Length: 444
Ligand code: HEM
Ligand code: HEM
Ligand SMILES: [Fe+2]
Image (cartoon, rainbow, N blue to C red):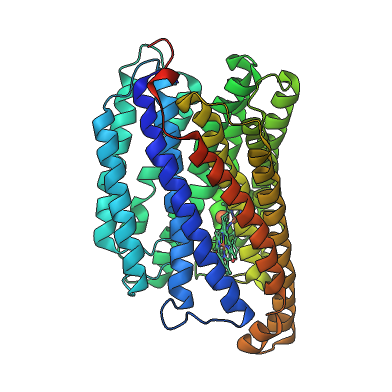
């Protein structure tokens, strides 16, 4: 690491991994409930487990993005972080808000709008927290003599993500309008501005890990970012088919969202080509595995499996079923989980001065978790297809179908155990690295 202040990233990374493990526990509770063993129902009902599972996911990914930004921005700005104290304060505030929200969910304190369940008073605290974060990295960039394209794309993505949180906070009487703007947050985050964050972090990692010229990597970054916006913004229409929005969204959403996989294909080809061209020269091969894996798996999960149900003719049958869960798992995994784990894998040796990337633990963590996630996606797919046919084509009762597909969740749990094993190995490796040390700072 170049500047001492970059070490603050460690707090965010450690928080990410702790919350990730907690997220997985709620996943198991739901997996067993789907199998017919809803034994914790009285204490943690399905809706509380589900809300906790998905909000923890978003929270830990945001914590990972923040850690990545606190690490990357000073380096790209070539100056120390504007204020390390403010970053620590902002971290503490994030953790406190997260813990209150999580406890609140267990007692039914929530808004009930999928992914935006955090109650309004806490939303305001989230906004203040994110403003502090943007201020801190923004000032770091502003005070630099020359800020890079990679840094700018990352900063733009983070700022836009903060702004897009706001449409989810307006209150509407109409359910239709409320749904309409909910998608501005949920869709425009994962299929819009988060892709900028992904592009920025991925470009940074590719520059560091492949040794290819920054100019080459950044040129492609522009093209991918351009394509993301072209397809992603109007692609929002693929969520407007059945909420009561005007009918023209069927064609607009269908056409533009069908183009979105091209942006993810671009990202995959980009990562693979750069890694091949640069060779495996960097000793930290495992960080490159996660980075290239992120490009490839996001194409499969978001691009390919997103396309599988994005056309109105298909979505008519699959909307809101386990097909959505199939796609949601692999898309989040490929695009954002692998990205954060890649960043952590790259930054830990840099921050601690220890080179623990060579052993079997990090490598097995990579393969086991990925095979586990592929298995989980398959289990959700089988359950989802069966559900669509029985419930929607044949017209069987919802609960009768849920019982009929219980067996597929045994497969889900088995694959989830594999994923969990991989994640625990990753966490073990992280713990072994220890905390950042002053010896790891170079030329500051
Ligand atoms: C042990 C591992 C896990 C298990 C057993 C598990 C299980 C589940 C289950 C049963 C659901 C609810 C499906 C329904 O609505 O009925 C769910 C939802 C969800 N999980 Fe997981 N999960 C696990 C890990 C993960 C991971 C690692 C991610 C992120 C990559 C993730 C992302 C999600 C998302 C985004 C949803 C909401 C999907 C939707 O919108 O329909 N889960 N999970
Ligand atoms: C990394 C990028 C992506 C992530 C993390 C992601 C994740 C998700 C999640 C969690 C949902 C459920 C949302 C909810 O019900 O509140 C969803 C829905 C959906 N996604 Fe994606 N997605 C991504 C990219 C894409 C792409 C590129 C496409 C199309 C090509 C797509 C097509 C869809 C469709 C059609 C739905 C609606 C499913 C339904 O009707 O129930 N997604 N996505
Ligand atoms: Fe979408």
